[in-house]
Each structure stands twice: as structure tokens, then as C-alpha cells.
Length: 363
Image 1 (cartoon, one colour):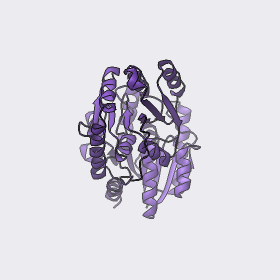
Image 2 (cartoon, helix red, strand yellow):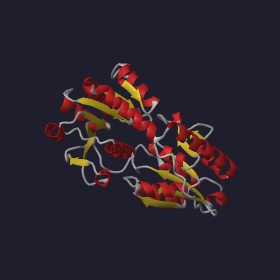
Image 3 (cartoon, helix red, strand yellow):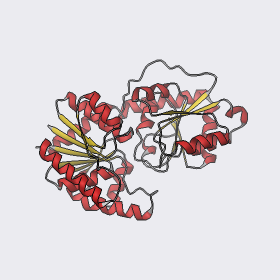
Image 4 (cartoon, helix red, strand yellow):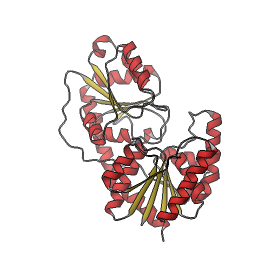
């Protein structure tokens, strides 16, 4: 079977990690795989390492520029004629819009919605435009894969397709992360992993830490993994608030896991989400989680493995204080989280569910 994956950006992120995981699995199953994306990023290098094809579409973007849209569609059409895929599997709203306009139902098309482009936190005009684009192209979708119940229910709410076209498949992670932990016993290490751009809000965590009693604040380090547009702003804020923040920049998946294993608490504050990979990775490493109660996060984080908060500094501060002051609670929540991920969010479950979708539309 030939699969063409379409994803707009090649930089490291949850959707890109998901695509790389699928490439790794289906290559081992002797599928012929090609990823089309913008070049020069983490995903391109990962595809080379895995040994699957990578086609650069330099016109891929989130822009509404008609010239770029037409050029991107033309590139997709040209490549599908050459490659002749059995399935085109789209990831991200922009790639799904472009891909479905290019294919127009001539090739079986799957769209994994990691989070809709018409999220509630967006500019209303942009949100309406994206929703309209989604409705126009919905007819060219054979199956929607939704990464959370929240994402699925939002798609149903806006009547994108009949319910039988929606398939709930949670993200999966490596559940066998068992290497020794080397934590710094002198500091409580809070950690955030995610792009430093909207909708992520690590600045609220910095603000919350700054308001802790000085004796507690002095014993906290906040590690931020990844880069992005907010990095300069966050560095300035940390300096102004006198918070001990270590910026690690972009790291490999293996390095991210190493950082998680050395941390004590995972803090994930965001304006909106579909179903974040990094929360699953943190829980698989045995970390208790403090997270925003948005999107599909509550489908994995609850009172048995973490603390859900509103995006209010006071609530975030109280949650941090609660876990910093109770090592036994941290261990209890972290253990429960690791058990939950192992039972319900393994890579194997995700792989098998996606493969079943492919088989169901290729008959």
C-alpha cells in the first residue's frame, strides 16, 4: 500500500511526531511512504533517518494568499500523479484544506484533526473563514480521525460530516520509558515542553512561580524545552520576575525524554488544545501534571494523576504550591498517570487503530 502524508510544517511538534511514528510503523509493515511538507525541519531529517520518502512543497503555508494556495495545490496534484498513492492522509488544517482541494475525492483521503483550525480562542473573522474552508472540503474526506472526544464532538457540532465518518483514535507514546532517574534533590524541577508560540502560555507559569513565598521560589527551577516566537519575551519576563528558568531550545525526542525523567512536575498551560503529545510523554515518565482544563486535556488528566486549572495565575500558583510541598502526592499522581498511559495510550493501540482505518477504505 502507498501512503502520502501531507503536513504543512516540518518543525518539531505534536503532529509532526505523530506522522514520524506512523512512518516508522508502516515502513516496517512494508508500506511505501512519502511525507510532503515544507523542507528544512525536524520532520525532514527524521524521515531520512527512518528511511521514508520526503517531498518538499515550498508553497505550503497557513497563508490565505491565493497565489500560494494555487501553487501548493498544483504541487500536490503533480506529485500524486507521479507517486500514485492509495491513500492521502492529511495532518493540520492547512494541509487538509490544500490536500482535499487537490485530490477532490479521486484518491481515498483521511484527515487527522489534531485540533480544528476554528478553535474558540481565534480571531472571530479568521475562525469563520477557516470553518467555511473546512465545510467546503469536508465532502472530499473519507474518514476523519480525531485525537480526542473534544475534537470529535466539535466536528459533529459544526456538522462537518455524518458521525460514521468520525473515528476517535487517541495519540500514543512509548510506554516503556524505564531508564534510571537522575533528579537534582536540591531543586524542585518544573518542566514545560512545547512550541513557544500561541496557544501555549508558559508565561503564566513564570508569573505564578514569581508569586510563591521566597523560600519556596528559591528551590524551584522551571525548565522550558523547545523554541519559538515567545522565547525572547519569556527570557525577559523570567529576568524581570527573578524566576530561575532554564531554556533548553529544540531537542531530539530522546533528549526530551531525558529532560522529563530528570524533572519533578510537568506544567502545561495553554489557551486551547486538541490532545497534547507532551502530556502523555510526561506521564509515561512518571510525572504528575498541572495542566489547563481546555480541549481534550481532561480526557487524560484528572484528580488521580494531576491537577487541572483555569488559565489564572492564582490557580496555577496554588497547584504548584500543593505539589511542591508534598513529595508523596507527586509520587502517587505520577505513578497513576504512568499506569493510565500504559493501559490506554500506547503506540501499539494507535498504530493498530490507524491501520484498521486504512484497511476499511481500501477494499
